[in-house]
Length: 370
Image 1 (cartoon, helix red, strand yellow):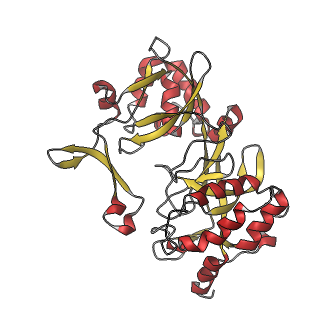
Image 2: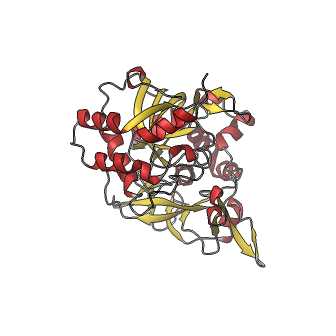
Image 3: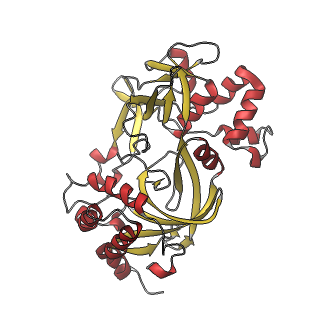
């Protein structure tokens, strides 16, 4: 439904420069695409690539001030309030769950020892990932992961099988707890014994469903729901030792493989699913079944240390647990504060999507009167 700039709490006077920079990085991904191509075949509401050209050009020419950034967004975009619909097309809600994630620092060693005993692995050569959009355009963005066995695609090995059969080249060793949480976050900054930093970036996962060890501990009666944060889980693992840790980890069959990257610009996060580097507090992970990459979204939610927070983010990442039209994962950045906030982010957020004026008008024209 259409919205109004003046009705968006916090919009007036907001510093939109980080979001503008994030938006420009998404714009760069459009340079080699055709104007008449859908921004996302799975999110036709976002219009075509050509609809976004003028906004991208204006953003690239905007002066580096908060006032100029706001003027650009107001001139080339129109706000549209997002709501969730049920299977019958009826309104199902105006808010959705917002969680948080971050890029952890992980101490690693080149050789395993008693403390650094968990391997980080590169993608195995027999792991196959298939983009279904190559076969059906309306399945663009959806993938199947597995391995080929006698000419058929079958499920890839689970966590226990990967570890037992030593699948995937090992490039570093970390503490078991740290490596497990690194796999949950999907990327991290590796710090070796000399203090050198390298990025471990997501390369692939084994295609099996993710199962939360926090929920498992709650189900077993080992943790209360309010204590099932990263800090609470880590405290339980430290208290129960290596065997209990390995047994709990085996509950989650999903396994994540990494690639190493030079940390060219420490001020930027890892590349998200959209292929662009993430911006702290200005990038968000969404479900690509409902959203296109590179779309600005004005969020309103109670965040850790920041009640009634409002801010502009850009859809630049996805995640296996991020499912639904108003489901988001907020990228906090890296470091201790980002880690603490990410681990305690769980809020209901309101979404206002910013669309090029022509795209927003088409949505308004197609909306039946109330």
